[in-house]
Amino acid sequence: MSIYKSLKWNHSRVARSADGVVLANSPELSLVPQFDAGTTPKSRAVQLLKAAAEVEHQFVVQYLYAFYCGGSAHRELFDIAQEEMGHMLSVQNLLAMLGETPYFGRAGGADPSDEPFLFNLEPYSLPFVARFLVAESSDLATLPADIADHLPAGLTLDHIKHVGAIYTALYWLFQDPNSPLGDWEIPLGCDVSSLAELGHLSDADLADPAGVSGMINKAADWGAATAITGADLNILVIPEDNWGTDKRKLRLAALQTIFTIAGQGEGPVSPGEVLAEKSHAARLHDLYSSLVTAPDPGPSPFPVNPSTTVQVGGADPNTYLISQTDAVARANEFDVVYEKLLLSIALSAVSPADRQAAAGGAIGLMFGINSKAKALVAMPRKDGDATLKAAPPFTFPSGGIPATLGAIKARLTALGG
Image (cartoon, rainbow, N blue to C red; front, top):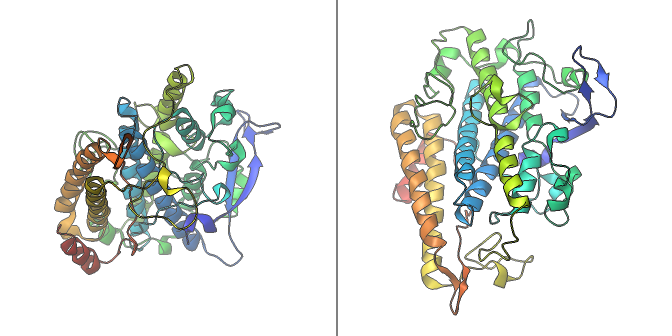
C-alpha cells in the first residue's frame, strides 16, 4: 500500500498578517499531517519522507511522459522532471540521516482523494498543466481565476493535494528542539499550533554524522553547476560539510535540503529566497497562460496510461494497449532502462564505494531513456492505424526496488547493467 495513502490530514485554511495574526477567509491552504497517539517524531519523519519519495517519483514520470508525448517544444517539463529526480535523491539522503535505508515507492491509484491527484500518464495538454500547477502552488490566491474550468474532468480543486505540506511538516520536525535553525524558521502560511503537535527530532534520532557524510553525494553549491550529477542537470544533493560528530551541522544540512526543495518547487518559500531560477509553479503558470489562449489541438495520438498487457478492468484496451510487435519490443526495452535508472539511484544512496560510478550511470541512463522514448513515440500503437502512437509505459517493477547493496547489484546484473 502507498505510504502517501496512509497519511491523514487536518484541513484548514489559514493566512497570517505581517505580524503573525491569523486572518479570516484565507486564500492559503494549510494541510497538517495527523498521526496516531504514541507515534514518535522520528516515525513521523520517516513516514513523511517515504511519502515524499513516492510523490516525487510520481511527478518525475508524469512530467517526462507529458514531455515525450507532445510537450517536447517546452523544455521546461524536462527541466522540472530532472529537478524532481533531484528531490527524490535528496529524500533518500534525508532518510540516511535518520539511519534508514532508501525507499523507492511510487504513488499512484484510481481514487484522487487518496493521492496528490489521480495518477495518469497523459500527453501534454491544458488539463495536465492545470492540475500540476495547483499541486505545485502553495498560495491559492496566485492561481489563474479560471483554473477550475480547465482541470481534468471529474477533478476539483479540493481533490488536489499540495505537496508543499509534506515539506512544511518535515522542516518543522527537523528543527532543533532547543532553538530554531535555518532560513525558514516559521513555515509561511501554516498553522504553527498544529505543527507544534508533530514535535521535533532529537539528536538521538539522527544518525552518526561521520557515517552519514560518507553516504551523501558531495556538492559545493546547491542546484548549480558543481553538483556531482553534472553541470547540465541541476540536480539537488546534500553537501558533505565536514560534519565530524556535530549533529547540529547534520540538522542544518537537512533543513537546507528541505528549504531548497520547497523554494524550487514544493513549498511556501519564495523562489528568490533560494535560487535565481523560477519555481515549478511559476514555470507551469507560464505554460498555462500560453495554452489557455492557444487553439484547441484536438485529440492526442498518444494514449493515457499505456501498457503492453491488457489490464484487468478499467479502460477499453483499444485506448491504451500497445500491440504492434516492434512497438511492444521498444516499450519493454524502455521499461528495462527505467528500472536500471531507479536501481542506479538506489546504488548511489547505499554504497559510498559506488557513489561516483552510480551517479554517472544514472545520468547516462537518463539520456538513454530519452532516446528510447523518442523512438517509441514515433511508432504506431497497433497495426493498421498509423494515427495512434505508442508511448513509454513506465511500468513500475513488480518486485519494487531493493534497498540493500547485494540485492541492488544482483538485480542490475540480471538486467545486464
